[in-house]
Length: 353
Image (cartoon, rainbow, N blue to C red; front, side, top):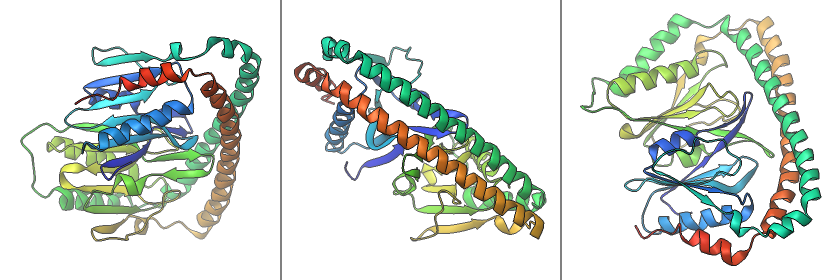
C-alpha cells in the first residue's frame, strides 16, 4: 500500500447495528464493481494487489478494512479522475441498481462439490457465529444506552450559551469571509470501530495530508457532534466540499469533519480515540471548560464510565469469538476456490486506464 493510499474501516459495529458507508461511496464512483459469491480471504488478497497495481500508476487509492479482520480489505476506491470502486459485497446489503454498477459473480470459481461435502460444517459454524454476533450487538446496544446516561450527567452543567459563542468563533476561524463560487460536495467515511482487539481508528491515515487539525476536547453529550454538523452546513452553504466521518459506536454521531479545500479537519479527540497535538498545525479546541459537573455528578460519572467500559469489554470478547468462528468459515470457503478460474476472473479488474 503506497504513499498515495488512505486507510478506513468500511464497516462499524455500532449500538444500532452494523453500519457502512458503501452506498454513499458508490454515489461518488463513476464505475462500481461488486464482487459476490466468494466471501473469503482470497478476495481480500486480490483487492490488496489491485490497490498496489493502481497505486503504482500514481493514483490515489482508499482501502476499506473489515472490522473483524483489520488486515483484510473489503473495498477499494481508486479516486479521481477515474473514481472506480471495488467491493466484496457478498454479505453487505446494498442497492446494486445503476448503469455504473457491475456485479461480478464469483460463484463459478467455487468447487460446488466441496461445498456440499462441507455443508454440515458450514451450518454448525454459521449457527455459532450468529449467536456471537447477536450477543456482541446486544452488548453494544447496552453500551450506547449507558453512554446516553453519561451524557445526561454532563448536559446538566453545560454552558450552552458559551458553546454557541465557541461555535461562532470556530466558524470565523475556519472560514473568515471565504465563499466559493461553486456547489459543495458532501462525502461520508467512518472514523473507526470496535474490533476483536478493542476500539480502533485510522485517524493518522485519514489526516496524513491535512495541514491543520483541531482536536475537540469535551465531555460526552456537550454538543461536539452537533457543532460539527453545523460546521458541515456552513461549509456547504459557502460552496466548500465536506467529508463527514462518522462515529464507530453511535451511527448518528459525527466524530470528524474534513474540509479538503482548506486542508483542515476538526474531530472529537476524546475516548476511545483520544489524540493530542503532535505536529505543526495541530491545536486543541477546548469546550470541556464550559462544563462543570458537581462532585455528585462526577461520582455518578465514574460509576457510569466503569459500567460503560465493562460492557464494551464484553462486546469485544463476543466480537473476538465471532471472528474466530468466521475465520474458520472463510478459510473453508477459500479451500473450495478453483484457483485458475478465480485468477482469471480477478484479472479482468486490472484495468488499462
